[in-house]
Length: 106
Length: 116
Image (cartoon, rainbow over all chains, first blue to last red):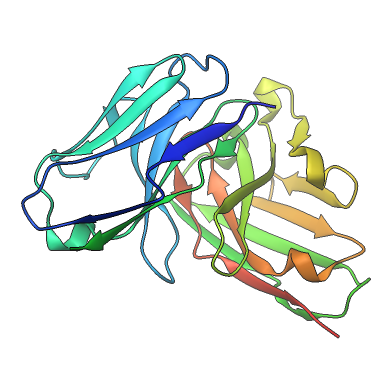
């Protein structure tokens, strides 16, 4: 089974900061990678799919890059509503989630 | 608007069974791969499995730990997908979400609690 290793597991940052979260696949997954944001008590919300395509309605400060085994989610200028937990997801025929990154206020 | 609404969760004793339901609307249900994901309290998201659309083979795939006790079915005439869980264990306690795989839309989740 393909494993997804997400880092860091937690991150402290301030409004206006540039933040990067990384996800590594144990083997190549082309661009079968999505990023999700989850707030407490809520269902996850897809931000990025196909490694770099922004979901409709998601602010352009979110961006995704990568292909193969290494992927990144970048938030260019952190806003207060962005403090949440982020997950990468290898999708396609078999799904595997990363362990999550909790983004907290510094 | 694409919408998914799960139901059927509740408190169940270990060893019991439960069938969760998910109603879809706002999209062509028969064309969609339908996925179930769960999240235990305070834990990460965990893929359960999915049911492919008929045009893509109409087959199911499951995460390895789910293969024995979990069964996904669907009724395209009713825009419904189901998750049957047998021989429930305490570690099955979680919020169970229904997801449209390609659109990335999730339901609000239904809570399953396994406890004696």
